[in-house]
Structures are given as structure tokens and as C-alpha cells.
Figure 1: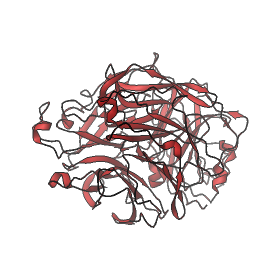
Figure 2: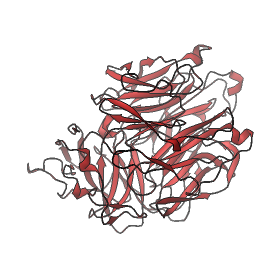
Figure 3: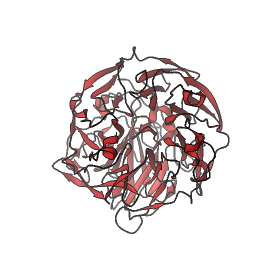
Figure 4: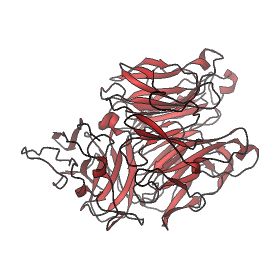
Length: 580
């Protein structure tokens, strides 16, 4: 396949601005084959996937060096000291501090039946901002808690070193807001916003459709609306047809009159329904979806929770691959599979899946239902997903966990699962990764699962820049706050990278962390536009490294339709592709 030229500027050292333009390469040149370089914490191996093996990799020297000579994968990359450093924290284990009021997230969200959130840096100041929305089409009396006298509108909250503040330039509506995602829809360099609606058409507020907001240098306006017969739940945003514009996959649930649809970006914030043309079945209903290249063919695929049909991307749209392992046993009429998290759980550099659930049977009928774990065993372009929930040690939950996230909470180099189910201590229930045994990732519960409390959705990010991942969770009941939990346990070495400068090419990009000599792969992850249960994912990836001796590591970023980018960054620091 042909890769488009790299259009991003790499500012990797102070004063160094380098434009990279790369030639084409095939997806085979990016594929990994077994070798002698063992990935830390797993039995997986890597050889041709090393930084030196990718002939078309753009180093942080750029495609052309400062002396005009061509750069290469083997060239020495200049060091990047990082945008912000943070040394590992002392202590042991996973622990949380609730800091909601301290960071300014209580008062702006009072009166809200919370159901949606998205994270991204909308003003380019380097701090993560939050969109939070909810179902506002309910009786006023249902929202009159904690000083609220009316349903809260959707909010945009600007992050900073002292917490969050309401962005008054964003005129949030009252609607049935069910999901959201930030993305640069007009290719002007800043993040726009798609707010997904779940209309019931029984009043003005409840009838408002999915809405696209344009970010014009910090000024927000409604650019367009998307009318659909379906009740929206989530949106994935990526360039399906590779015309340089970000398209939409709008998930619809089973309670409306229309299914999940695909929308082509025609430019100028105009969208047309291309579902039939791109091969989408007309009977797909879901609460969540995820877009990632599952079979390593260079095209993003779409997983739809609650449906065994996976949409396999290609140059002509999508084809269907049936994965019977994705079927769920349902116990009642209000049981639905929910959020999807993507990550490399077994160290083989293929994207695995964790899927949460919105099962009323857990609360109403006392049925213990686990979130489910699926390992990607694809080979030769053929998709294969194997369930390993029991083998991985995942317990049943006595409450819902619609949202799930994959993150290394303690930076020990092993992926943990953060759920939106609450423990008996009213903190997020975490399944801590303990290692990989016989190619199966193993997990242990941290705390005792609760028997009722859960949060709808959430986002994970290092909001306070202390080198540990924090969790913001959205509360449905207006009587309770939507909490932000700051990670307060011990941690080890880590690194993070923000790839927002890639624009629409960030979607689905694979990010690899290697030792500085390029011999050992330490971690792999993927950039998503939507994650978990209808949450908009930030373009920042945070990876724990365990305890390593190197002061620097190499990062290789492999966008779907661009040549790989390589850079060297300092351990225990956060960096931004495009400059600090």
C-alpha cells in the first residue's frame, strides 16, 4: 500500500524544527517477525520490528539532516530531554486519592446525569482538557441535588496546573448527550468536537441530534448536526477512504429506529452517509466500538461490542469477519456488552481487547458477570480473537462496569485493567497485571468489588504531571459527584508521548518503546479516538517501563498511512511530537 507523505513538523530539541517527507513502504516492512530480542515481561520476541529494521523510519533528525544528507533509521537521533519530568514515586501498590473538589470538578457538573466525556488539549497549552456531557432531558426535580436548580448543560473544562475551569466560550447545550470525541475535522491544527446524542424525540431537549462543534482558535460554534434515525452512543473518527479528511463511525444502540452508520467527510463540516458504499451491515446496534488494525494489514478495523461481526478495513471499505468468541451470554432484557479497551496484553505486539458490560442482571438479579479478555491470535492477515477471561484470573462483578481502560497504573511494565466498577471502598476496581504465564496475561484484583456502585464512563490521563495515570469517572446520579482519582501509590520508570501533531493520522497509530540501543522492546500501545464506553481518548499515551538502567529510550510511532517516526526521549518525562 502507498503511504502518504509525513506532514508534521518534528520539534524534538530546543530550536530544532525539522520537516520530514518520506517515501512509500509496504505494510510488510512494518511487520514484526520472531527473533532473539525478548520483550520485557513476556515471552514475545521481536526482530524485524526493531527501530533499525524499519528501512523507512524517519528519525528525529528528520528525512533530511541539518547538513542536507538523508536521515535513516540507523542515524543518531538528537536527545529530547522531555517537556516535563517527574521522578518515580516512592511506595508500593495501587492507591487512589479523590481530589474532585480540589481540581474544580464539583460545581461545574452539579445537576448532571453524566454519560459522556472526552479528553484532549483543545487550546494547545500542553494540559489535558475535558468535555463532560449528560442526559438533560429529565424532570427538573431529578437534578435538584447539591445546590443545582436545573439540569446542567454539557461542559468544556480547560485543564491547567491548578485544575480545571469552565470554558465560557463553549456554549454547551442541554440534550441527551451519550458520547463524545475530539478530532481535527477541518485540518486546521486544532481539535474540534463531535458530541453524540441519543434522541428520544419527546421534547426539544431530548430531540437534539448529534452535533459537530468547530474550534476556531478557541472560539466554538456549531458547525453542523447529523440527523439519524438511530440513538447514538459513541463515535470513532478516522480517515476511512484516505482522502485526507476525518470520517465518522457513529454507533447506535438497539433502542432506536436506526443502526450504526458511517459518514464520509465531504469537507467544510459536511458529512454524507456512506454506510452502504463502504460495506456496513444495516443491522449493527451497539453501545461502544473501537477502531484499530487487528490483522496488521495497514487498514483500521472496527470492533462493535455485543456483535460477533468485526468490520475489517480495506481500500474498498469494510468486509465482515465473524468471531464467535465475541458472543455474550445474556441473563436479562437489560444486559448489554459495553466499552472496549485496546492494548498489548501478552507482549506479542498485536492489539488485544478487553470488553466491559452494562448488565442490569448484576444489580437486579445478583448475577456476577466479569469483564472479558480477548487475545489477538491473528496471522497471515486472518483475524482470530481468543477469549482468555477465566485463564487470566478475571472475577465476576456484582455491578456494572460499562467502561474499561488499559493502563499501567504503577508503571511496573505490566498492563493493568481499570474498570468503572467501584470497590467496597468506593474507588475504581483495578485488575493489576502480574505477568504473563504460558502466553496468557495474569491479573489480580486490587480491593473487593462492590455490589452496586459504578460509574458510566471515564478517561485516564496524567492530569497533574506527576508521572502516574489518574482517572476521571462520570457519575450518572446527580446526587453524587463525578470524581477524579489521583494515583497515589508507588511507581517505577515511565515515559509518555503526545502525538496530537499527527492530526488525523494519529488515529490507530502504533507506539513502541525500545531500549536506547534498539535491542529490546519495552512496551507497545495504540492511539484511539474512542475508548472504553463512549469516551473520547486523548492523543497522549503513557507507558510504564518498570525499573530500567537507561536514561533514555527510543520511541517508534507507526501511523497507519505514514512511514514510521523515530525519536529518543528521556526516561521519566512526558514529550510532545511537534514541540513543547
